[in-house]
Length: 275
Ligand code: ADP
Ligand code: MG
Image 1 (cartoon, rainbow, N blue to C red):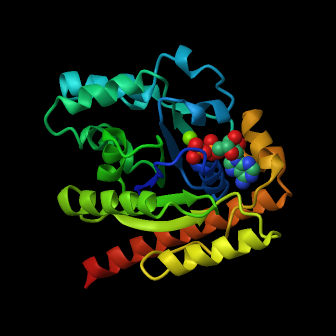
Image 2 (image 1 turned 180 degrees about the vertical axis):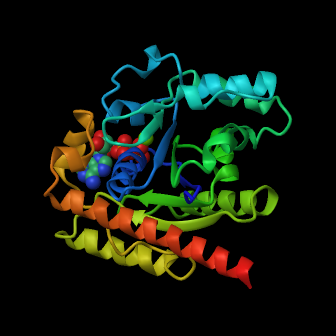
Image 3 (image 1 turned 30 degrees about the vertical axis):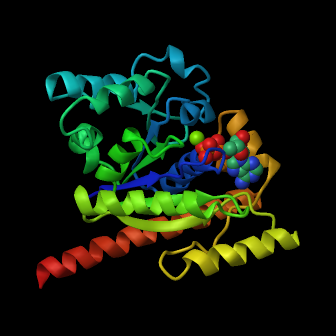
């Protein structure tokens, strides 16, 4: 039985590595023989672009049409819209039309649960559904939090805007209280780290000190490497572009940890039913 775990990759700040992490975590998990669906949930369509689909605005089947169908008719055909990528995982792309969906959501009832309803028919067919969120805490991101089991927060090691991170954590807490009691922060992931600089080391230490008490901070950090940026630019995962690099290794280690977490949760769940 597939895990059926949904993970939102979120941070309202842009350029922190959400898309890069979504794509490479999906690729890393599928190298571990897991069945993965990546949902691009940002009107910029960057996940699709990072996988070689260079013009998402010309793509017909995207998450927006599927959500619109759900809004209009209370049902939708998601299965026939799924793209099988060369990386071995599945993708539902996004494009600029997704911004209109966010506006539409504001005016309907049950606006938080549309993505959850859309994913219902496929959730248990995948081990992981990864959602690449847009850089905001608007209704799209709230939809992602409402259906997710956990959130991974990519963070660049720079002096953190404390209020920004606080807003994000409060938003997660509010969704947990109001819509989705099982929502957890899977971890804060430090991306684009440069351990060689003193500043890099100092900020890594501060992130652990400020958040480590309440949240898991992944010990495995994603290094800043030109090959990681290049791999996205040529539409490949780091595993296909430079499989022996330490960037690839860092995403392998992340995929392993995420996979083992899910395995542990399933076991705990089964044991509690058996008791
Ligand atoms: P977000 O989705 O949060 O906006 P991206 O994943 O698109 O962030 O990353 C922003 C930019 O930084 C992109 O150009 C990407 O290629 C680059 N980038 C991401 N991670 C790394 C890394 N570890 N090393 C070097 N460049 C990176
Ligand atoms: Mg992005």
